[in-house]
Amino acid sequence: TRSTEQNSFFPENKGCFMFDDIKELERKIEYLLSNPKIAKKVRINGIKLSKSHAYYRRINEILKTINI
Image (cartoon, rainbow, N blue to C red; front, side, top):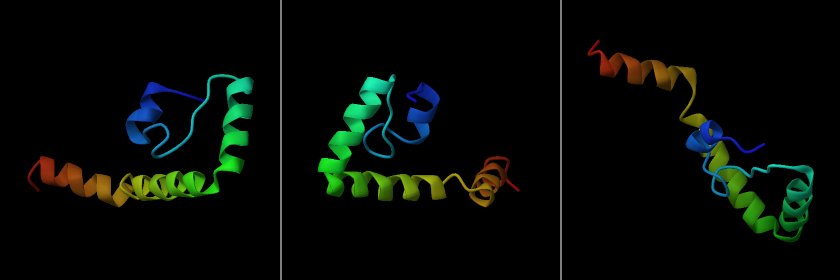
């Protein structure tokens, strides 16, 4: 479902697809089944974005921030 927090990590229609209700979900599914290239592009972007949120990367950023 759509949320502001999730959108900050995975921008809608760039890193993921979101919906508010079942009707919107059904429309998005139909759209994505008709547009597999778009679905694949967003899926790949989502994978790339999720890699930047791995624990080891977050720890390194924290250590850099506190100068260790």
